[in-house]
Image (cartoon, rainbow, N blue to C red; front, side, top):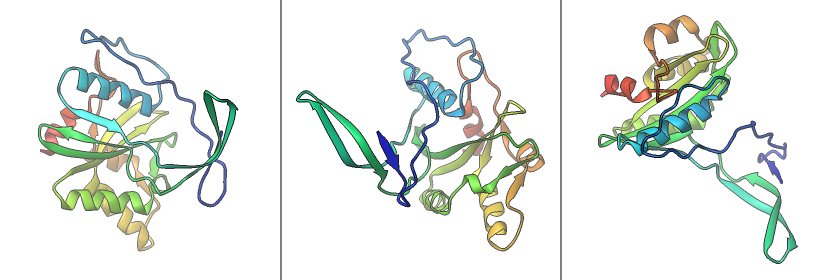
Length: 200
């Protein structure tokens, strides 16, 4: 199947595995080499199984334009387009609070490039914040093997400064100072709800 952006360029999907299904006695002893998305999906499954929160990755809106039917009982999607710009990666509910956040990775050691975000994502988070939602970014510095919860308000400050000709990245030092470090636990690769508690 070929999925294309509105400009016609082909989309290359990252290599990820199917999300895990855990029994109520789920225990994770840590996995190396997981992507941030896989780590968050695993954490969200654990949070839901244990009744702490319901948070899911948002589906990407796709418009199918070409389908082949090799058999009467099967259909194969051959070409599709992203029909609308996606918003953030995750949303859900925690203790009666609406959560909306994006997850980003970088191999840059000294800064997080703002080009990883898009204007529509910032606008979406601002709209959710205005309605009382809790918005943030989870940023992983892959080379450092460090993950932070970074408040949307701090992100907005750098985004707005960039629009006025400021720097096009957020220094690692700022994220380390203002963000909340997320350290993997026995059953949680990304225990972000503890950090969310600090935002409530």
